[in-house]
Length: 321
Length: 96
Ligand SMILES: Nc1ncnc2c1ncn2[C@@H]1O[C@H](COP(=O)(O)OP(=O)(O)O)[C@@H](O)[C@H]1O
Ligand SMILES: [Mg+2]
Image 1 (cartoon, chains in turn brown, purple):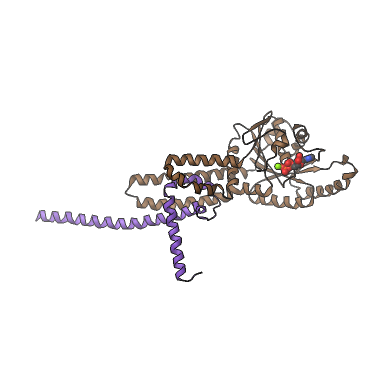
Image 2 (cartoon, each protein chain N blue to C red):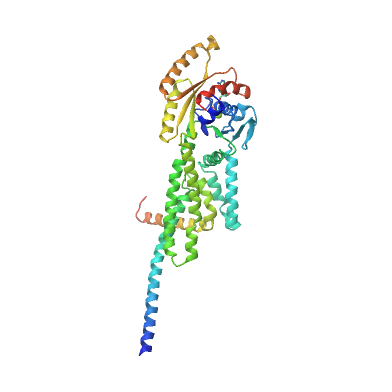
């Protein structure tokens, strides 16, 4: 594939998902290297709280973008760092508007929300959207190395679910404000204040961010999701289920990467395993017939650094640009 | 006579205005009360986790805090009172 072909066919957002240990990180790294080698300015992003992108590239990566090669950058989203930034912004805004005594008094409440079960996910999601918005300027494409399936499905369906909830909150606030406006009919300054209600404004901004994310994720011209699995029995069923679920949420699945396929030259010790893999590979080809299927060989060593990534990245071409 | 009529009319106008005013005031008070109640319930949806009610979006609700921080304490008290009143009623009827 030529550079131009890649640039025409590639999606701006490519996700690699699947169970832990199957090779999501290795695939995301290899694919990002493939794009960069074709002249695409590429950012590879890890959304898995248990990051291993730095291991795959054998280079330090952190919560700030690090350059990994020509036209290639990487970042590992750190939920805690993002949450702290968010809290700081909230507190600064608060000090603008209310007394320090009040700020002090509600510190406890802030702690509670900060520790709430959804907080880590929400913090990751915010950074995720921020990065998505940066495409088109700094980068041409983003490759996402995601967390194991359950976590990622929640992350990707978050905007749909929370969007509806926030809409409900906006409606309630609007109703209260309409009544207030009625009551304040003869009080012009008050009526104006109600018109510019910051709560409705803030909730609406939030809702708009969610719908933007949802629009991008469900646009097959913009986003594509690839599943990584190994040629074994259970992963096939699990992948089929996950593909179905993503489809129901309107997210397009493009390809299946079968990783760690034992090569024939592996020798007699692995021969029995290799034969059973062949059977599962046949099953995968029938079951996912409508998708692109890429097979990656099991290498004789872990994937750590450009040398091994360089072996896999040309094979990623079959996923399409 | 003219003068008396004029004064009478003036008084009548004042009277009407006054009553109109109280009527509007009363109705507006009802409307305002309803608005406040809706808002109190909304606050419960926004910040319920402060009172131990789980909230799927509590992290995102923090960005609203700057605009409601001033009212938060009185709101919590009102809600606690409401809980208390409901508990009292329930006790009356031997609900538990
Ligand atoms: N094709 C392969 N050949 C050899 N080792 C591999 C291959 N793919 C992945 N690995 C190794 O398997 C382990 C898990 O891979 P990783 O990409 O981190 O999976 P995941 O991100 O899905 O948890 C890592 O140690 C990685 O180096
Ligand atoms: Mg990984």
